[in-house]
Amino acid sequence: MAKARAIVKRRKAVRNIRKITKTMQMIATAKFQKALKRAVGTKAYSKKVRELVAEVARSVGDVTHPLLRRPEPGTGRTVGLVVITSNRGLAGAYNGSVLRTAGHFIREQESQGKKIELYVAGKKGVSYFNFQRRAITQRLEIGDTPKFEDVEKVAQSFIDKFTAGAYDAVHLAYMNFLSAGSQKPEVLALLPLAGVEPPKAGAGEPGELRVDAIYDFIPDAQTLLDELLPLTVKTTMFQAFLDATTSEHVARMVSMKSATDNADKMVKSLTMRYNRARQSQITTELSEIMGGVEAMNE
Image (tube, rainbow, N blue to C red; front, side):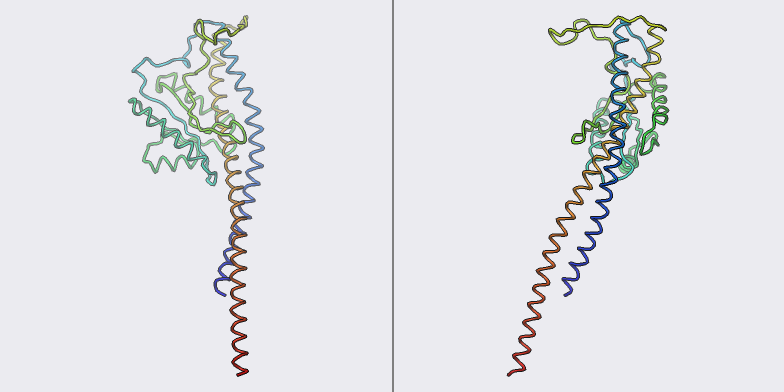
């Protein structure tokens, strides 16, 4: 009887856990739908801003701007790295993938003699680097729902430090949201700006037809670039935070669905074990009763 009671208690505990994981799955699904609309809605804008800056740069020709500054070979020694993780766990391999990618980038840069200054968003990333005994320059408080005003302040601080020469490059380690079924951990080069410099002569695919637009600038092109280049940095960082948040909700949704399915399987297995234990117990009791009856008849 004790074995059957233990199985009943365990099955009840598993059912309670299933209720929790099912609820968390539903919450993650609702948050994912909301985050997906924000991430998809801003991605087209972020992409178009970068394309517009590239076209303006091509029209101007030789572009000179502090945000396009590249260190001379052998001079770049300090790199800022922003690592975006979650504040909560139960999200499968989400945080582990981002932190492994960031760790690989850090080792690669340090092998080249560069110094890494860490900026971490999310409690999981802070705990990881504290455990690794790696110094964190600043902990970024962005929140579970990123706001452009908060990200803009962080991006502006990196722009100021890069312009002043404190950093030779700034990178972002985050989970890039590609689709609901595909997320990829990446390290994105935030500064200096990549992909906005005018292409070299003869660049492009062989036989590719490329038509360049001719612009009349009011105000002048340099003034526009002074406005657009910082905006490109800010929108790129904001998009990275949105993609990271959306990927986190997807990972938690999938993880909780898997936990719920496993709980269902465990409940079925425990029910079968209970039935067998109960059947064995009834058989034993019947045998004892029959033995007692035979003893009384003798």
